[in-house]
Length: 165
Image (cartoon, rainbow, N blue to C red; front, side):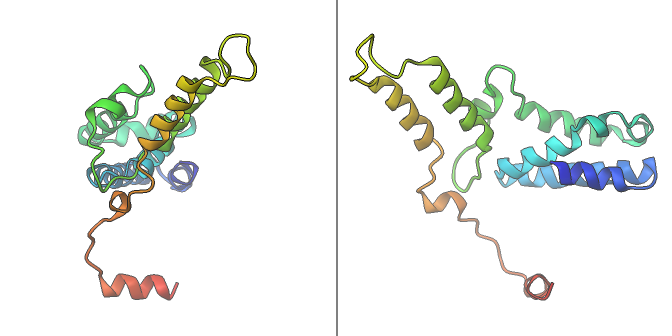
């Protein structure tokens, strides 16, 4: 997120800043379509950075399509109601890269909101709490290789360029 914000802030004019915001949002849209929710959310974090939001002249340069794309994408990662749009409306089928902050928030709520032990007996752990942890972590499907098995066609020119950087 900070890299995105830095790149936008380093642009020399509001027009260039607006072009970068539009470009980053197009990238975020493509990542969203690929179900790479983690990177999409990071790009949105950068565009939503307070320093970027204060650039009034840059905002005037944005076209309606870019503003609409921002609102639509941002709505999917809205933390209100426990990220309900992310949890319930989005396709999490394979391949998919989850937005890990949602699971971390859930794990924190389980930790803080449920007793570790049953009643006053400090020798009997809460099995229900352990089940909640297990369900949250299992929901990430980290052990399933098809979750990250994107079927991209290799492009030799790009591979060569990246290998020689």
